[in-house]
Amino acid sequence: MNNNLSTTALLHYAKLDANLKTIGLKVLAGERITPDEGLYLFEKGEWAYLGYLANFIRNKLHQDNTYFNRNFHIEPTNVCVFSCKFCSYSRLYAHKEDGWELTAEQIIDRVKSYDNQQITEVHIVGGVHPKMNMAFFLDILRKIKAHRPALHIKGFTAVELDYMIRKAKLTIEEGLKQFKEAGLDSLPGGGAEIFAPETRRKICQDKVSAEGWLHIHKTAHQLGMKSNATMLYGHLESYEDRVDHLNRLRQLQDETKGFNTFIPLKFRNKNNDMSDIAECSVIEDMRVFAISRIYLDNISHIKAYWPMLGRTKAQMSLDFGVDDLDGTIDDSTKIYSMAGSEEQNPVLTTEALATIIKQAGRKPVERDTLYNVVKVYD
Image 1 (tube, helix red, strand yellow):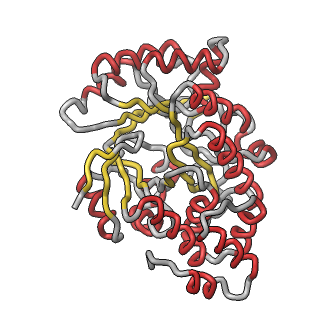
Image 2 (cartoon, rainbow, N blue to C red):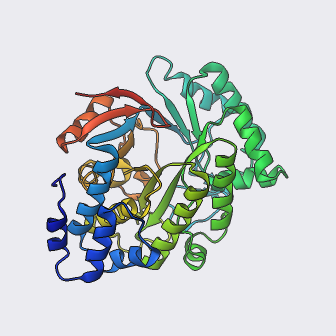
């Protein structure tokens, strides 16, 4: 895709639609678009036009740099007290025969298995298990930090944190302070799903509300902890729901500046209670990435989670506003493989991930969790 976008070419591509021209000119001028304009892009914006706009912003912010890190996932359990309709991963606590539950020793052993590797991050998320409480995980965090102090721990979705902290009868601030003191460095973006209340009720009625999710991330930011943000798309949500979600994130980022990156997550329809809903097309995937890049003018990075998209589509996303492909992952995450994603064995070496980025005409940059540069690849 042309990295040197001209105003003439942009306006030509917008054809005769005055609204698209107006939005395009605002983007070129670095001006913020409104919720109504974001909605108009979802309704009327052709994917190549959106790609030009998003790519313009991406190149302005990051040039050809495309980021990734060396990380691994630990999923302590897939047993969960919640029953989200879109989830292919969890097993209800009352019917947990085919679930897994790692012990504290198994989790620590998993960390120790990477002792001789240049890993910078461990990502810990899983189901909400009633017996894996706050005390259980605080002890694990302390042991990880005692064993490998420099390892960045990114852990626990707002859904997990809300449950554990409420169960411990603490305020969110009190609970997060204890997690931080024990060694938690940042929060992942999971559990956001879609903020619009009616749609959220239909797909995940019993988990933390949108307001609760935002409050947890706001509190973490106020305590000096960075976090990520996500949006689950391609299910029951409307375009209005998507814009509402993006707008709430943009408003919180204006206030706290605590989000590192935004990750659109595609709904996959295998082995869950929403299997009757067809998955959206790759064109719609790219439109979501592009509009997210255009709308979220105050979040520096847009990430494509390659195990969810597949490697080829992840490469394509780099021309639609994406500048981050997550990490090497290792074969330690089952959340998307159990839902039918293209990547049934989600593992890439550092060299393989760098090659994928180079093949897309971009420059691989290894980072740490907070986007400090570790290595630039030739």
